[in-house]
Image (cartoon, rainbow, N blue to C red; front, side):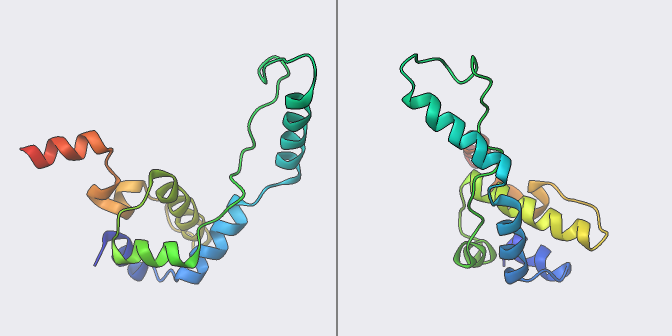
Length: 126
């Protein structure tokens, strides 16, 4: 069993709850849509200015939560990308806060699988 699987069982967090929380957290807001629209218009403008000059930041949300298959892969202990681990972490922390528990860090959820590639390679070489 993976660290993620054990953690979710201990805290009684279901895969469906993680998917729902992730969808709620990652969906675009109206402000995100407005920013994307302004960036789209700026790309098509004749006077090409950078986004920094126009004070147009990137959207704060990705627009896509994690799927049930992704949560199942995490529960099985397969390797996940950093972005997916981050989305899972945000969803689990939201559920923990809803349960009036303390938020956790990525190492509590994924253990050594959360290390950057170069640090994991150094530890395996020793």
